[in-house]
Length: 161
Length: 297
Image (cartoon, rainbow over all chains, first blue to last red; front, top):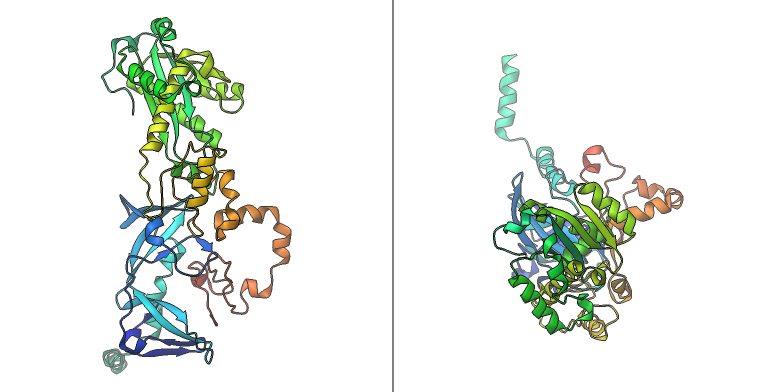
């Protein structure tokens, strides 16, 4: 997840390059279909999720979180679907197969919310995953450039002294 | 589910009740606890109704007896249908609940339910699960006003338990027959067989319905040993709940494996078998949010 990426055709970091352009092609929107499970599935590839994974709304709401229920491999999962903050999008990336640049990724799909699942526990705002969203606010405060007004108010304060 | 008419007059006389289960052994479908109760004075008539251990009766006979006892105004009954999803989930929880405990809870739930209806239960006959004496003590402590008789093969010894076994068995068979599968994949059929692991029909149904990622449809009890034998056909899935079990057993090897990369002095590539990221080696803000710095991916 990253901010404001849609306007730039690619993003480069030390870790590699992500290509968001796809030559103008539109990518599938997976909103409502992205699930974060509390386990590690040692498989990477397509599978018939919609036929086998059937989340059900319990009708219960706790601290503003709508509780859902699902089962995976015999375990009961309790979860909730959370929207990504305004200005952010989720992306599904795949390593580009051209061997030239091993650290090049392409965007295959995007999403605006995701369902977070716990094994044996109700989802809560205190879950590490939910709290990780705090980083967005901290990051914004750290990286936001000072505006003309910010500078003016400082100047004003200095003049007063 | 149970008898639906208001509280009959005889319920304020001393009553006896039998409790039995159906579908404890099968690898799929619900487990059903059933009970049947009547006044002590009706006991003699009950003995003439030809209830026998449900397993020794043909299906049509059981169905007929169930309809008869439902129509009999001197008899009350109730069932507790435990969903296979609930069975698997409880047995695979972080703090696992075993099948005996689930069975005991279900039986006690039926006793509470009937008592709450206002029935004056004085004697309750139960087919045992686990050690009979320990089970009897557990039941007596919970319901001190009731005399409990806990026995092996109670379903063939006491007509009131035979009756309960018919209630349970017919309910289990109907539940399995009318089961609405959660899964919507096209290649799913309903030839479950009896559900017993040894039944060839059940075996081939399991073979035909295993799924590399999802395991089986949720009708199947994943916590059964039968399912474990299929694990080589399935993609491995690691759970935190299981990882903790192993931690306790191999505390020393775990400590020995504690390398610098593990405590996070060097930003590392996330391992595929990590269930969650850790944020190890970063300040508390990141640790408590499990935000790890990935320098390569």
